[in-house]
Amino acid sequence: MKRLNKQCLVCGGEFLPKNVASVYCSPKCSKKAYKQKMLRLKKEEEIKVLAGKIPENKAFLSVPEAGILFGVAKRTLYRLVSQGEIPSVNLGIRLVRIDRSVMAEMFGPARSLPQPESAPKKKLYSLEKEDCYSIGKTGQFDHLIPE
Ligand SMILES: [Zn+2]
Image (cartoon, rainbow, N blue to C red):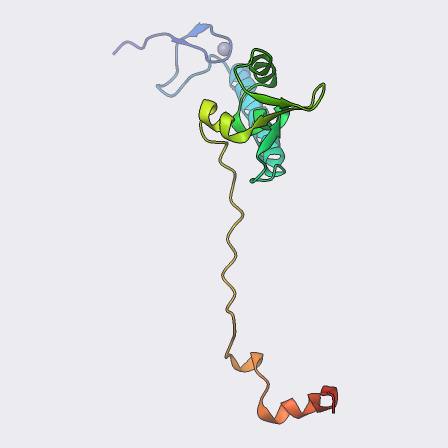
Protein backbone atom coordinates (compact mmCIF):
# COMPACT_ATOMS: atom_id res chain seq x y z
CA MET A 1 0.00 0.00 0.00
CA LYS A 2 1.33 3.37 -0.94
CA ARG A 3 1.72 5.69 1.95
CA LEU A 4 0.34 9.13 1.43
CA ASN A 5 2.10 12.26 2.34
CA LYS A 6 0.95 13.76 5.58
CA GLN A 7 0.90 17.32 6.73
CA CYS A 8 3.17 18.08 9.64
CA LEU A 9 1.18 19.28 12.63
CA VAL A 10 3.83 21.82 13.49
CA CYS A 11 5.14 23.39 10.31
CA GLY A 12 2.34 22.32 8.01
CA GLY A 13 4.78 20.94 5.48
CA GLU A 14 4.06 17.70 3.66
CA PHE A 15 6.16 14.71 4.50
CA LEU A 16 6.23 10.99 3.95
CA PRO A 17 5.36 9.44 7.30
CA LYS A 18 7.70 6.72 8.59
CA ASN A 19 4.69 4.99 10.11
CA VAL A 20 0.99 5.61 10.57
CA ALA A 21 1.59 7.32 13.89
CA SER A 22 3.96 9.93 12.50
CA VAL A 23 2.48 13.37 12.64
CA TYR A 24 5.61 15.47 12.50
CA CYS A 25 7.94 15.83 9.54
CA SER A 26 11.16 15.93 11.51
CA PRO A 27 12.64 15.47 14.97
CA LYS A 28 12.86 19.25 15.06
CA CYS A 29 9.12 19.61 14.65
CA SER A 30 8.43 16.81 17.06
CA LYS A 31 10.60 18.55 19.64
CA LYS A 32 8.80 21.80 19.02
CA ALA A 33 5.44 20.08 19.48
CA TYR A 34 6.62 18.59 22.74
CA LYS A 35 7.71 22.00 23.99
CA GLN A 36 4.36 23.49 23.03
CA LYS A 37 2.57 20.68 24.80
CA MET A 38 4.59 21.25 27.95
CA LEU A 39 3.88 24.96 27.78
CA ARG A 40 0.19 24.26 27.39
CA LEU A 41 0.20 21.88 30.34
CA LYS A 42 2.02 24.45 32.43
CA LYS A 43 -0.53 27.08 31.48
CA GLU A 44 -3.38 24.74 32.31
CA GLU A 45 -1.77 24.07 35.64
CA GLU A 46 -1.53 27.80 36.32
CA ILE A 47 -5.16 28.26 35.36
CA LYS A 48 -6.16 25.46 37.70
CA VAL A 49 -4.31 27.16 40.53
CA LEU A 50 -5.94 30.49 39.73
CA ALA A 51 -9.38 28.92 39.38
CA GLY A 52 -8.88 27.14 42.67
CA LYS A 53 -8.44 30.49 44.39
CA ILE A 54 -11.86 31.71 43.31
CA PRO A 55 -14.40 30.82 45.97
CA GLU A 56 -16.97 28.41 44.60
CA ASN A 57 -19.87 30.37 46.05
CA LYS A 58 -18.73 33.72 44.71
CA ALA A 59 -21.74 35.02 42.82
CA PHE A 60 -20.13 38.01 41.12
CA LEU A 61 -16.93 37.49 39.26
CA SER A 62 -14.42 39.95 37.94
CA VAL A 63 -13.74 39.67 34.23
CA PRO A 64 -10.41 37.87 34.68
CA GLU A 65 -12.03 35.46 37.13
CA ALA A 66 -14.92 34.78 34.79
CA GLY A 67 -12.44 34.25 31.97
CA ILE A 68 -10.50 31.72 33.98
CA LEU A 69 -13.53 29.82 35.22
CA PHE A 70 -15.35 29.69 31.93
CA GLY A 71 -12.37 29.51 29.61
CA VAL A 72 -13.25 32.70 27.77
CA ALA A 73 -10.69 35.28 26.70
CA LYS A 74 -10.75 38.44 28.78
CA ARG A 75 -10.91 40.56 25.65
CA THR A 76 -14.00 38.69 24.51
CA LEU A 77 -15.63 39.20 27.87
CA TYR A 78 -14.86 42.92 28.00
CA ARG A 79 -16.31 43.23 24.50
CA LEU A 80 -19.46 41.32 25.41
CA VAL A 81 -19.85 43.36 28.56
CA SER A 82 -19.41 46.67 26.73
CA GLN A 83 -21.90 45.56 24.10
CA GLY A 84 -24.35 44.70 26.82
CA GLU A 85 -24.34 41.04 25.78
CA ILE A 86 -23.37 40.10 29.28
CA PRO A 87 -25.24 41.96 31.97
CA SER A 88 -22.76 43.26 34.47
CA VAL A 89 -22.45 45.36 37.54
CA ASN A 90 -20.01 48.18 37.07
CA LEU A 91 -18.26 49.19 40.23
CA GLY A 92 -15.92 51.51 38.36
CA ILE A 93 -13.25 51.32 35.69
CA ARG A 94 -11.98 47.76 35.46
CA LEU A 95 -14.28 46.83 38.30
CA VAL A 96 -16.90 45.13 36.22
CA ARG A 97 -18.57 42.25 37.99
CA ILE A 98 -20.39 39.54 36.13
CA ASP A 99 -23.06 37.34 37.56
CA ARG A 100 -21.69 33.83 37.68
CA SER A 101 -25.02 32.27 36.74
CA VAL A 102 -25.17 34.43 33.61
CA MET A 103 -21.76 33.13 32.62
CA ALA A 104 -22.91 29.57 33.18
CA GLU A 105 -25.94 30.18 30.99
CA MET A 106 -23.87 31.60 28.16
CA PHE A 107 -20.77 29.46 28.31
CA GLY A 108 -21.85 26.30 30.03
CA PRO A 109 -20.67 24.96 33.33
CA ALA A 110 -17.55 26.42 34.85
CA ARG A 111 -14.27 24.64 34.49
CA SER A 112 -14.46 21.60 36.63
CA LEU A 113 -11.95 21.96 39.35
CA PRO A 114 -9.94 19.10 40.67
CA GLN A 115 -11.71 18.08 43.83
CA PRO A 116 -9.47 17.81 46.84
CA GLU A 117 -8.94 14.19 47.62
CA SER A 118 -11.62 13.26 50.04
CA ALA A 119 -10.02 12.35 53.30
CA PRO A 120 -11.27 9.17 54.88
CA LYS A 121 -14.14 10.03 57.13
CA LYS A 122 -13.15 10.32 60.71
CA LYS A 123 -15.01 8.12 63.05
CA LEU A 124 -17.03 10.15 65.50
CA TYR A 125 -15.84 8.01 68.29
CA SER A 126 -13.53 5.16 68.62
CA LEU A 127 -13.68 2.10 70.71
CA GLU A 128 -10.20 1.03 69.84
CA LYS A 129 -8.23 0.14 72.92
CA GLU A 130 -5.53 2.75 72.34
CA ASP A 131 -8.16 5.49 72.11
CA CYS A 132 -9.80 4.68 75.41
CA TYR A 133 -8.58 5.15 78.90
CA SER A 134 -8.92 2.11 80.98
CA ILE A 135 -10.78 2.49 84.26
CA GLY A 136 -7.49 2.24 86.13
CA LYS A 137 -5.94 5.09 84.19
CA THR A 138 -8.79 7.59 84.51
CA GLY A 139 -7.80 8.28 88.10
CA GLN A 140 -4.77 10.18 86.94
CA PHE A 141 -7.04 13.01 85.83
CA ASP A 142 -8.92 13.26 89.13
CA HIS A 143 -6.90 16.29 90.19
CA LEU A 144 -8.27 18.14 87.18
CA ILE A 145 -11.85 17.78 88.34
CA PRO A 146 -12.95 20.81 90.37
CA GLU A 147 -14.12 19.87 93.85
ZN1 LIG B 1 7.30 19.92 10.38
